[in-house]
Image 1 (cartoon, rainbow, N blue to C red):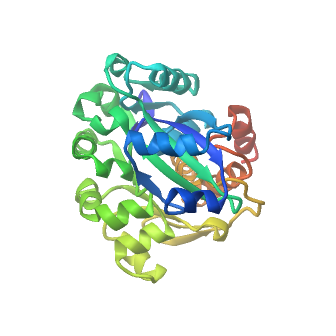
Image 2: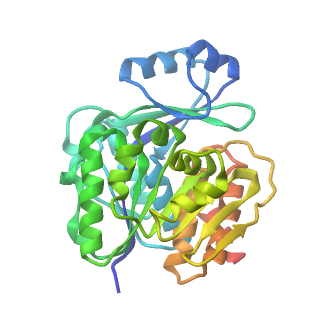
Length: 328
């Protein structure tokens, strides 16, 4: 029996979440609804513009959110990442460990700045992200813990790593190690901009195929080069043995290798969609790790992500996550 249900690798970013208006985005010249990489000066300028706002702070990064959700459901997870020897780095590691996730600790001695993600939430509950990667942009194979990876049931990585040559290489190497050890592989495409600007790199990370792929419908269609969802489904079958396509208020589509399953949405009034896809992935992977059917895992993921969007931030309190699980 493996020590960990899941081993993840991804960016370590402290989320700074602000509630803003579309006018704020216009003044700042920021594209709505996507993640944009910025340098530290640009990000500090954004934070200066929003200095009258009071941000909510928490440990983030797409894969980290999924692994923490997985842990809150009761799974055992490990997360490889890179932070600096600064206040945000120590905050991040403490928050990760308190979330029940094991991790590599040695990077806390590195110089530089821990990555930050300014998350801008508009009244329509959409999220726009401006990310300064900091030392996370230098994530590399040095952050891999091969012993933990080989002692896991699943390996999970995020598409955001495609923007860094060293991080992309680390993800590819981790997948190679996982496959050699018989560990199942999973990836999230993460963001439409990753597909739009870095598709060749994503295909490099996917390699000969993954056991499970997560995408929203825009990412799926972008990978397929088509605005037809059915064509996107057919395309994803060529690169993933199983996949889940999230569709917001329309629910999700899940391919279990034999049949396409429709996952019903849970109707809610959304407040903030930050982390919804991450929660879906974490909950879905938890269900599969417990031997659940794809239908049941998808229903849990739908319920959990629906609950998440009714609150601010990319995570739920642990007790609330458990209350969702108890309903199943």
